[in-house]
Image (cartoon, rainbow, N blue to C red; front, side, top):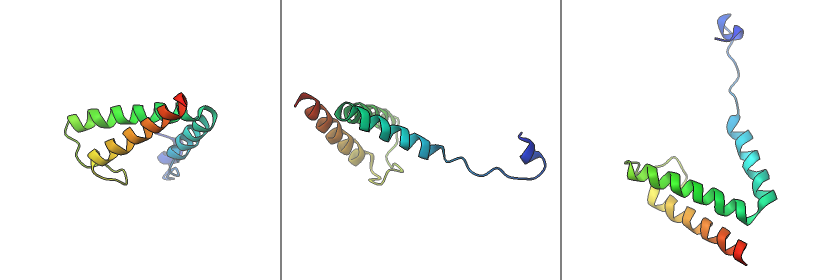
Length: 85
């Protein structure tokens, strides 16, 4: 327990997601299509595994995991196509 919590003060929320998003944006800017293909492929594998284990609705804006998988497959395809071009 942190000292601030011990005396009754609450810590402000840690905006870790914003740091992660900034890092992903930096890598995408530096690596371009390779990063797009890599991150989309990684996300596709994660959603594929989760769907096989029973996840049907995602917190992603698209909600249905089938739509998310299609979206990620298209992104990966665009990334691979751009690398090969």
